[in-house]
Image 1 (cartoon, rainbow, N blue to C red):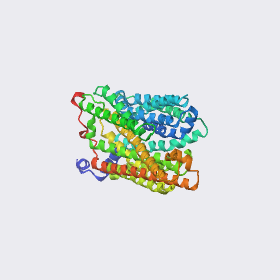
Image 2 (cartoon, rainbow, N blue to C red):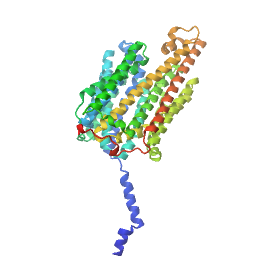
Image 3 (cartoon, rainbow, N blue to C red):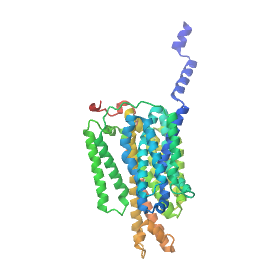
Image 4 (cartoon, helix red, strand yellow):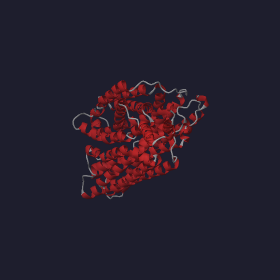
Length: 530
C-alpha cells in the first residue's frame, strides 16, 4: 500500500514528466491530410480572387483595342468587380451562415469560374462589365465561405496558424497578378487573363467535392431581413462608386458629391433600421466589442495604405522610370517577399508579444514603408522604393493574421460568415478609398507642379497626356514632368503614412491589452431573435 500511496499521492518525477509530455502533445494537434487539402483548396481560390483584382490592369490597352472601347469604359469594367464584390459581401455572408460553408463555397467558385469563362470571349465592353460583376458575386460568396470552412475544420490553434498565411496568399495574388497578366499578354489574347481562372476553379470544385465534409449549418434563429439587405446593397454600391469616381473628371463635381451623400445617407438609414429591427442582417452589437472593432479599424487603415501603395508604385515605375507594364508588375515583388516572410513568422511573434502588439507593429511597419516610398519618390530611386514595398509587405504579413484571428474568435459560430464579410467589406471600401484618395493627392500634386512650368501645353496637366507629350521630349520638358510626378507621389505617400499612423494609435486605444475570445465578450443576442 505504501508504494501505491507513493505513486498516487507522491507524484514521482518520472510520472510528472510523462503527464507533461502527454499534455504538450495533446495541445499541439497535427493537421490531418484531409484538412490540409481543404486549406490548400480554399487558399487556391483566395489567390484567384486576389489576383483578379490586379491582373486586368496590365491588359487595359489590349482590351481597349480588341473591343473598340475607350480606356474609361474598360476602367469601369475593372471597377465593376470591386463594386459588386464589396456591396454583396454581407448579404453573401448571411447566406453562408444559413446554408453552410460547403454549398456556399461551391456556388461561389462556380459563379466565379463561369463569369471568367464568359469574360475570356466577350464581344463587347458591356458584356465584359457583366462578366466582371459576375466574378464579384462569386468572390463575395468565396471569402466568407472560407472563414466558415476554417471555423468548422480547424481547432483554435490550427486556425491561428492557417489564418497567418492569409495575407501572404492575398499579397501574392495582388503582386503576382500584374506579372502573370503581362506574361500571358506577350503570347496570348487578352481573354487569357480570365481563362486561366477556369482550371483553378475546376480544381477548387473537385477539392470541395472530395475533401470538404458536409456539415449542417449552425442554427440561425434570426429571420431574413430583406429591407436591410436592400439598404445595405444600395448604400455600399453608391458610396463605393463615389469613392471610385472621386478622381474622374468626366463626372461633374456635384454628381460625385451627390453620390457620396446618397450612399452615406443610405448607410445611415441601414444602421437606424438594423438597430430597430428584431431580425437584423448583422448584429451591430459586435461593434461594441473592442476586439472586433479594433481589429476591423486596424485592417481598414492598413488596406487603405496598402492598396494606395500598390497603385502608386505602378505610377512610380511606369511614369517616373519609364518601365513597361510587365517590368512594373515585377517591381512589386518585394511586397510579396515581405508578405511571405512575415506571414510565416507572425504566429511566433504573436505568441511572444501578443496579438495587440503584433497588429500595431505591423501597422507601424506599413506607415514606415509609406514613408520610405515617399523618400524614394523624392528623386525617383527604385532601390528605396523596393525597401518601402518590402516594409509594407512585412507589415501586412505581420498584422493581418492576428487581426483576422481576433475577428473570427470574437464572433459566435452562427455569425462567422456574415461577421467576416463585414471585415472584408471594410477592407474593400477602405482599399478603394486608398486608391482614390492617394490617387487624387498624386494627381493634384502633379497638376499643381506642372501648372507652374512655363510654356507647357495645357493637356500636360493630365499625367497620361503629360507622359506622352513631355517624358520623351526635350531635356527641360522631361525634367519638369519627372519633378511633377515626384511631387505628386511624395504628397500621396505622406498621406498613406499618416493614415497608417492614425490606425496604429486607434488600434492600440481600442484593442484590449489581452484580447478575449470568451463568450462573455460577445454581444447578447436579441430576445426577439431567440
